[in-house]
Amino acid sequence: MKRRKRRRRRLKPKTGYGKLGFASYADYLRSDLWRQKRAEFIASDWVKKDLMGKPLCDICGDWRLIEVHHLRYDHLGDEPFWDLRALCKVCHHHEHSLMA
Ligand SMILES: [Zn+2]
Ligand SMILES: [Zn+2]
Image 1 (cartoon, protein in one colour):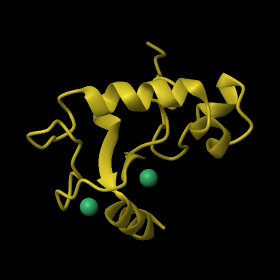
Image 2 (cartoon, protein in one colour):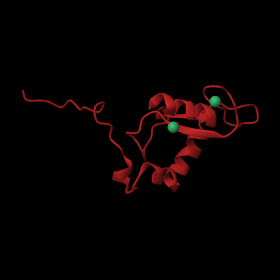
Image 3 (cartoon, helix red, strand yellow):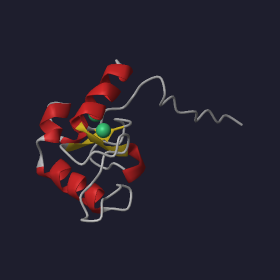
Image 4 (cartoon, helix red, strand yellow):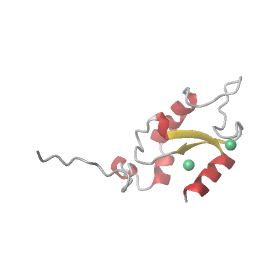
């Protein structure tokens, strides 16, 4: 039995944007593909909303300047919603400072 199909995803994060024909992650974020995905995500149950239906920050509950954060980058272009998180600008910035 020669079956060595262990994928080492952890060690080598796969970036999807190259596959999709984007030169960089920033390019991907400017694409219609991402715009659409982002809108779908915001509209989904994965994002908390206030009574008016405004998306809220997943961390602090603020409703201003909501951005969508990628928890992982290996599914770019085909992100499952659980890879994404709606955050306000402040929390988003904070998350990235923790990741660095
Ligand atoms: Zn926040
Ligand atoms: Zn982010």
